[in-house]
Image (cartoon, rainbow, N blue to C red; front, top):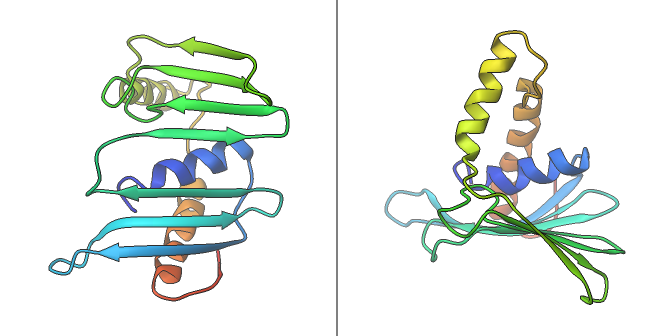
Length: 156
């Protein structure tokens, strides 16, 4: 969770501007080291839900899908574009009758992140993920771990 689970949690919070209320989760740990090797979770944000699974043991793949009443947005390889799939965002209408595909060849997300940080450090206007955002995300991950040890809903 601390390595790859932060991506879907941060992305959902960033895209929606919302915070989760409670979570349900299942966490599988390595019997020798105790580290998590698989986690699946569902977070209740009040007006929508986030669900995902992450694993260090399954075949590598990344995708995110944002569902809405008018359609859905599918993001291929949102965190390591080029490593797991092509740089692509697809907008689908409700009935799958139309899709718009946007490609971003050569995108290097980590380079862009470092460049954005450098702009912010120079005092330029650049969006940053604040310490407060990091604390809120860690609260969600901690709730996932707590819930992974029991059944039911865990408040965030």
